[in-house]
Length: 568
Image: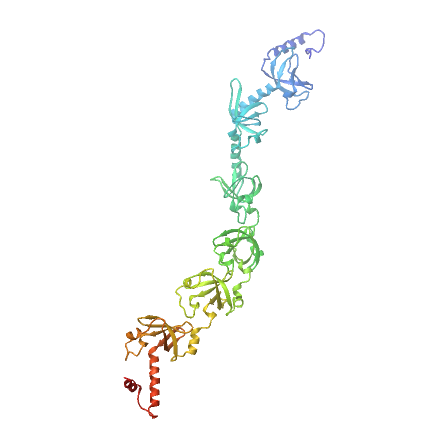
């Protein structure tokens, strides 16, 4: 481009014009390479921008050095590279001017502790390259890029943010170290201070779920966290925080606690909705049948969710009319949908008592109809105790078989001598009591009571035969028909006035058949007493009566004592 004419004409220069020209040339001579000067855009081409810096020719700058294409007349700052290029033109640089201005501004910001804008342009070893103020390159260590550990550096590429300058020097080349984390920490401290100054308990705030713990979730309120405790997520029972909120989810929350001294913030999600307990009476009454879901099982019962925020307890005793439930896990699992009846509630304590067995028919109410007295059954022995056994009539309903009801005549010492668990046994119902939920069965009642037959057929004083089963120091045991054992006491072996009982008892042995008199029958005690002595007397009396009848056909006045003496 041609040099500019100083007077705009080709004619001779006047004296005043010459003075101006000399002054102008003098000012140009004062320009030095590397100096920052202001120029005016005078022309543009497809690749260049031409700038008038007040010299004899315009400077030419590549269009690539501009972020935004300039217009004619725009004022820009450039650095003078040289006043005479290879073609006699002035050489200037906008990029170097930007660096010079940026360096000046960065020095001011560093000295004053002010943050500067920048953009992450590259991932380098140990951190990131950041372009500050669109001109100066800086290094941001990875540990100082954010408030938390960075797992994926690529996510920070092209991030535009604000940075604090931690180190700035120029020793041959510019060296700048920045920290985005330091700026974030200052912002967090400022935001947190403003939060505590402006918010009160009960205020509604917005936050983003940041992370989880076993007891809740931390919510980002603007670089600082508030705690959303698991108990504050719902009016209902919360087991897993992740079931109610998701990471990254934005929530409207109530400030439930604000402690300025400890700088702790507690948040509540459930308080953004009405407390369902406040309107419990509008929806539930005693004896209502409800549908719910099992949320928790314990040793003492099951918790059932009636609706979100309201749970009731089914005590273990209210699970079944008949089944002896040792642990609710035997019949329920978490997540089961069930029906239950409202047995009662305490709104102040926020407790609801539920029953599951109450929605089913209680078989004990009609036990006397299901199993009337006299019903004969063959069932399995469920459990044996020392003095009896439980016989399972059906699932959950057991009848009791007492050791006393096993046999009319035998006296076993324990039930194990009679039956074993899981053994099938025939029994008969002897009592059925719905009120006390008691049903008893017997084995001996399957046959007639031999004691009753004994009493009827062999009254006291009658003679009966039996087999000696045992001889002891105090008498002899004799088994008669029906398996009944009676005792002949030693004192009733013989008439001790005339015979020696010890000698007489030696004449008998087990297995011998003897005939004796029924001395006493006690049905209540199932006790039979027999007597040989009474039989002997009966025989003697019979013989004496016959003797009197045969004596000359005349009535005799002889006594039994006289008869006995006569016989001697």
